[in-house]
Image (tube, rainbow, N blue to C red; front, side):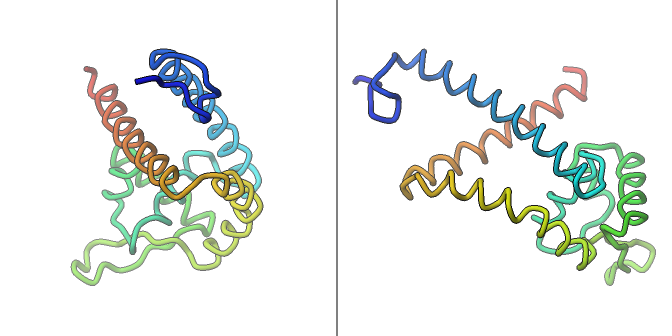
Length: 164
């Protein structure tokens, strides 16, 4: 079966296509890192702090500082310092844990969600415009690849931190 198709420009073997995917993935990561840095500067946060905020925004509700550590891959002490910075910046708030009065939970501050959403508005439209060019079946493949690649990234980060 040939790998030539309109999507690949009629070029190349599977090996060449895989090499192209790897190269474009590296470019995507670099582009995302540059974008994250610029957006963080725009909203007055450190890039790591902005990544944490983005992850918190994906959570269905408030999370513990331990959850912040798990989401970000930070140690518990680093996650505590991160949360302290975000509280000081007014981006997150600590809430009493209804299940354990000794613990607090972390949630995005409502005004921060609106402020960050505003900063994301133009880039979000630009990224959305890219996706408009794909059929639903292609979007499903892209979403699946991104989910799987993120899982591999998290697993490899954990492996590297553990010294393997």
